[in-house]
Amino acid sequence: MIPLVKNVFFKEKGTKKKLCRFIEKTDALSFGKECEKFENSFALWQNRKHAVFFNSGSSANLAILQTLLNLGTIKRGDSVAFSALTWATNVMPIIELGLKAIPVDVEIETLNVSSRTFKSATEKNPIRVLFITHLLGFCGDMEKIQSYCKEKNILILEDTCEALGTVYKGKKLGNFGLASTFSFFAAHHLSTIEGGAVCTDDPKLARMLKIVRAHGWDRNLGEDGQKKIRKEFGVSDSLYAKYTFYDLGYNLRPTEISGFLGNAQLSHLNTIVKKRESNFKKFAEAIYTRTDLYYPIQSNHLDVISNFAFPIICKTKEIRDSIIEACNKKVEIRPIVGGDMTKQPFFKKYMKGSQIINSTSSLIHEQGIYFGNNPDLSNSDIKILISIFSHDYKKN
Ligand SMILES: Cc1ncc(COP(=O)(O)O)c(C=O)c1O
Image (cartoon, rainbow, N blue to C red; front, side, top):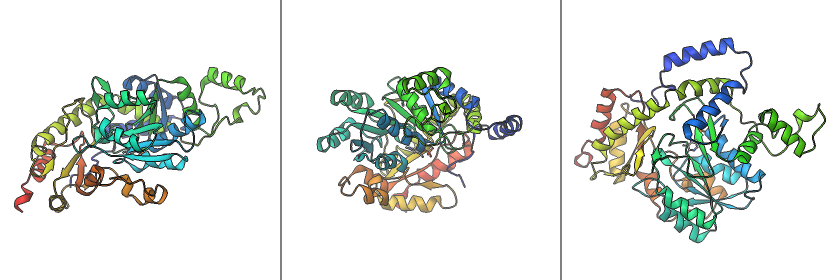
């Protein structure tokens, strides 16, 4: 059986050994130097000024919206548009924080929101924020989306949890908006087992993200940052200074174990991206050319494609069902991420009437599947995958 996730880490054995030694020699394993080192290195890798490390990508999504609310950049009731084809915790924080979640349909050629689908969504609703997902390492025409958002004063947040390392028009995804979120869950590009981050160039946002991450207090702002905020709020009582809660927050902190793993895996990230891209190209050449069976997905607009799974959108449900049968006990497959969010019970419960009629997201929900694109796939795994997915299902 070829699983969705072959290994928890790249260079798994060595990484686990190093992790055991690190735990043995480290006293306090709560947020500390390893996490801060990872934040600095990850910001550099991503070409952004700040990276704030979280305990998951879901936490990063929740924190960036809470941060914008705390800063007054957005207010409860504002409309936040999101890609209808995404993961639940891209949408849930929008609803949880009293914002209006507006689904935006995707294009069949890219699986992603385009300037066309976004413009059509804004015709019906005034949008304050576009929280766009770069699904499975692909993206839409981001430069056009960017200029439209600038014209309409719409903030862009990028959920980059599935696209770490993809480069579009010379820029890594996650660099097209005010802030971008990342996931370091084991099945994603870079694993800290569980983990996430928010990247931004805005120092005010980075400061509030750290306050939101840890109880609303100032512990992780550094000495200068603490002096500044205490002065701003007139906090002089030395006993209470460390127990002053400045704004709404949570406890979304990662541990030093995650920080250590982030640092260890980051040194392999370029190799990981290259391997996945090389696998992707082999699969695309053999599988997307079967246009009688599948909708081809475009990647030639990308300078680098970095995905952890290979998506296939079948032309009919019958083809999809034949593939599910052919994969039985041989290849682990699953739907395209979380499918069309507007079909999910939570969305119907809280956002009644917000469905998109006859959407492409719905077609992908019904007819799409993916298998894992791991850097550790062997040549024989790749051969098996290609033979299963390029089989002539129409003749069966
Ligand atoms: C698009 C997207 N956003 C957010 C998340 C949440 O990340 P995490 O699993 O680290 O909480 C995921 C997870 O798969 C995702 O695919």
